[in-house]
Length: 419
Image (cartoon, rainbow, N blue to C red; front, side, top):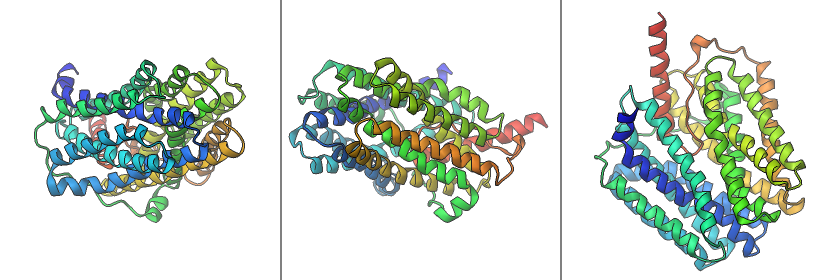
C-alpha cells in the first residue's frame, strides 16, 4: 500500500490542497452571505449555481482536454478558479456571487476530470481499487480540514477568501511538476433517461433524489448554521461533521453491500438519514444533538451514492455501464441543482429548521421508493452483483466509469477464484 501511495503522492497532495480551498469557499459563502444580509432563497440560488457549473464542466471538460491537452486545461481552469475565489469579497451582490459560483463549479468539475484521468492512468488493475480509495479519502480529509482553517480568520474580511485562493493556486504545483502526460480521455455519451430508468428505476430516482440531498448538505449547511445563530467555529464543525461520517460509514456499508439485497441496505441507510434529520429538527439548536445529526445524515449520503451506482450496474451489461455512468452523473447533477432551491425557499417561508424538514423528506422519499421497488422485482443473486463502487458524489463521469470497470474486473476475478 505504501508503494502504491508513493507513486501518486503528488496527485493526492494536490487534491487535498484543492479541497482545502474549495471546502473553505463553500462554507464561506454561507457565513459571509449571512453577514451581508442575503436571504436564504438568494443563498440557495448561489449554491445551485455551483452545481449547474459543475454539471456543465463534466460535459465540456473532456472535449476541451481532447482539443488542447490536460496541462493547458488544468492550468487554465485552475487560474480561473483561483481568480473567482478571490473575487467574492470584491462585489457582494447575489447575482455576482451566482455567476462566480457557476464559474467555480465549472472549473472544479474540469479539474476533477483532468486530475482523475491522471490518477487512473497511474493505476494498474491491481492497484486501481487502492488508489481510488486513497483519492476519495484525500478529498474528504481536504473538505474536513478546510473547516478547521476557517477558524483562523474572520468571514467579514477578505482574508479567508484570499487564503482559499492561495491554496488552490499552490495545489497545482505538485500535480503539474510530477505527472506524466495522460492519454486523451474518452467519456461515453450518457445513456438516455428513459433507458436508464427502464434498466434501474431505483438507481435513477435514487441518484436524482440523492443529488438534492448532497447539495442541500454541502450548499446550505453553513447557511442553516448561520441563520440559527451558531458561532463560526461551530458552523465549521457542523459542516465538517456532515463529511466526517462518510469516512466511518463507507466501509461497513460497502462490506454489507456485497452480502445482502442492496435495496434493503438503501432502505436502511435512508431510514438512518431520515431519523438523523428528525433529531436535528427537534434539537432546538443544541450543539451535540446537531453534530450527531450531521454526522449520521452526512455519513450515509456518500455510501448511498456508491450503493445506487453498484445497484444500477447489477442490471446492466459491461458494454452499457460507461453510458449509464454518464447518465447517472447527469441525473445526480440535476437533483443537485434543484436541492438548494427547494430548501432555500422552505427556509425563507418556514424558518431555518426547514433545512432538516426538506433534507429528511429526501431520505424519506428514497426509503419509501426502495421499499416499493422490493415488491416489483426480485433481487439479483450475490453471484450476479457487481463489486461495490467506493466513489464520492463529487466524482467525475471519468472516475465513475473507471470505478465501474474496476468493479467488473474484481467481480470476474472473484468468480474465477471461487470456481
